[in-house]
Length: 309
Image 1 (cartoon, rainbow, N blue to C red):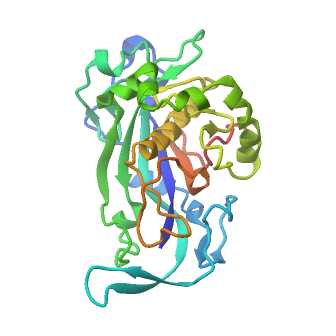
Image 2 (image 1 turned 135 degrees about the horizontal axis):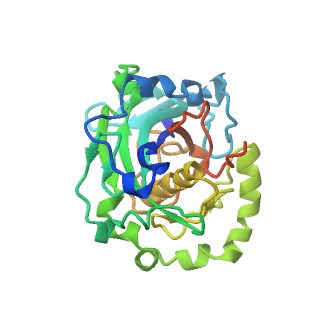
């Protein structure tokens, strides 16, 4: 099985549209629940392919040339016990198993209904996280969770290659000092000098057009289409058109950062259908995002897709 990622994105609306004096994180009430599951675009899991044959088409364009399909229907994968191989069927779809929330207030976790302990000196204070009328960037924290909807709904749980974790915490940026400083992040990721500059941004024009009407151009891995540049790999973004799109940009940067640090692995290529492999750059065509709150988007979006579409 080769699954791509369909990521559910939450923007913490509890504080985005409020005055600074009332910017408090609500606790004791999680936004995860049955209502969330009803907002997911399940059609965005498609197309469903067996080998190179499309069995069920989907509502969104998909890039066939980025490892979306393999020619063989039957596959063999090595195992530890005799006979030391397993025969299976090659199929692929977009698996909704990751959940990202972008929050303005450090430590605020509306998905859990908790206020996590976070030092404002490390995670940034409230004023640095707020977009003002004159600011040219936004700064927010992101939280990444495993939210395997297929597992939670007990669908296809008997597949040998299906991840059997329903919910877990993967990454909290409040405790990552690299997320808080563009300069410190550049020391760890020196390629930011090569890709995070105005000249490299000129190459992102074709990616912006492609992501708006079709799929993003994955070889331009540093581009986020109409949103921003993935560099620097920190919690700031110059995408200040609106909070929702800016927060989605930071969610996209988080996914790339996890690839860069080999925390998130690839499982959708033509040659890694048996197991995940580490991939320090992401294949953008393998990801879809769906903003859920404050207003659920009826359909998923690809990385870098303009909010005008």
